[in-house]
Image (cartoon, rainbow, N blue to C red; front, side):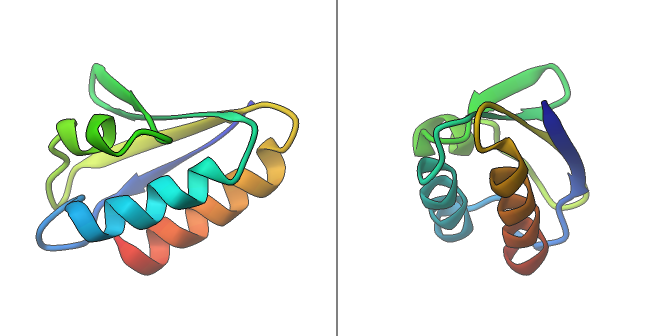
Length: 85
């Protein structure tokens, strides 16, 4: 299992456009990919679940990736978070 932690820098938090990009990226991989904020977590392959977390600017999230392609998935998702959020 691979994971990374990221503090959201986007003023609006995780809103529709970047959430869509993150979900599309996650859907390319076979691994199980989850995002967690506090006690709440969501499947990163499901847009409505990611949006329902209501992550705001300055909040910390942890992304965990587990599966056959976890190395590549974790690296690409971390890059997307840094570029978009």
